[in-house]
Image: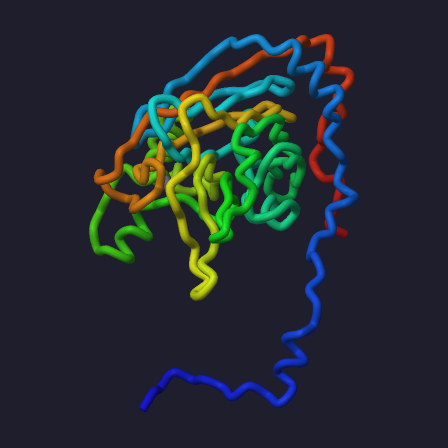
Length: 283
Ligand SMILES: [Zn+2]
């Protein structure tokens, strides 16, 4: 005898299931990235800073509007969890869920990273992705997802009963605390759902659960973004390493990641249509 409620399918179940899906957010009205002008910005790139994120840790970095930044694989396959804020107003931050709804489950060149409401504007444009060739594999997996959230010590405690202090959420909180002077408890409220850089993920075909598999990233690969507003970035090197087996422990082989910041020719600034916060007003 089971106490879990379970219902019989109605007689027209097959008919109801056969209805064709429609895309929730047809995105053809989004502004097309101007790759011709972007190429001019790219031609003027000059590296001005780099930050090494040690394994199982995080570091913040600043990227002014009109600059590029690259997240570069060094030493070995490693997944990174990325947070972005408006450097001038930390209330504006990356909105992983709406970015997923506007683009798709995994991002690549030409996709934008959108900010939360009420701002809802592009924070950064993905300008180059050396893993763009990967596409979607036989398992339905792809790289750079906006479906996972970040590994965190609260979920780890919920599932395992153990405490682990180098989850991506913890790493991002420590780096954010060091950047802002806030406490870890305050930082909990600012750290948000991430872009899972280089992580290979999908949903299992049978149980529809979030899965991960070894990242195809190799040293030298990078994900490059063009900052469309002044950015404060925060990148965690996931304790899962290449995320082939587990996370939230010290078991996986972990490697550093490098963040490179590039300035561009300021004379080009007039040629770009910089995104403004949403003009929508509540009545
Ligand atoms: Zn992680």
